Length: 317
Image 1 (tube, rainbow, N blue to C red):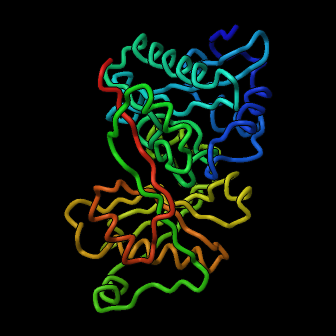
Image 2: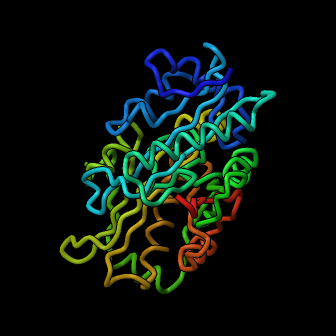
């Protein structure tokens, strides 16, 4: 008999076993360990054991799914109005679809009980807050096309596509920034500052990135005025499991009045050159497919899509 309940303190080793046995696709850390789950999931200050649903066949774990929330507008607390089921992991089982469907349904019940009025499928930087570095690459990409079995769980439950995310990569060996008049003019008028382990600017940023090696590049103008920032991390432990040195660009901002002046291109290119000089061999970033400006920016810098993710939406609560 299959039963469903929430996370118990003695579950982590068996959850790691389930992860290793599940077909989560090439963008999932393997082999999974209890320590990796502790760092990226259980230790988060907003972890709620009632949102991690476990399927059991007597005392044997046969699957799990995890639901959670994102930050409020000020990034100072959790916003329970929008929730998501971040992943559903079930190894091959004669009742696999029944287990998957039961896990997803109970995640939805949890989200509704907490107060969610919008229910999604898949983790993103704005909704979820778990599994960074364990699934998806440099950021949280919804459910990847390279995880078709997991996508099928949401489609079978009637979820529809809310948005698409492109996973973009570029090799950095021998990388050189583009040289043109605009870039030379920006170079003469600005200063690039590199900050290792910068102070986290919000509670949400601290909660989601504490424990990872974060590096922030700041572009400064006259009198030290901040023009823009680009934040990278080393995508651990996933990059090590892939056998590459990978820098993940997780955030780029240009101050409002300075947008569309070539600063983003210059900032990212200079950061990539600095990383390449240190021996980083690959860069990755995630971009919403409908963000034409960002797709164009990274295309000009030589990034190419290697995978795509879907954020699903539950139309009927």
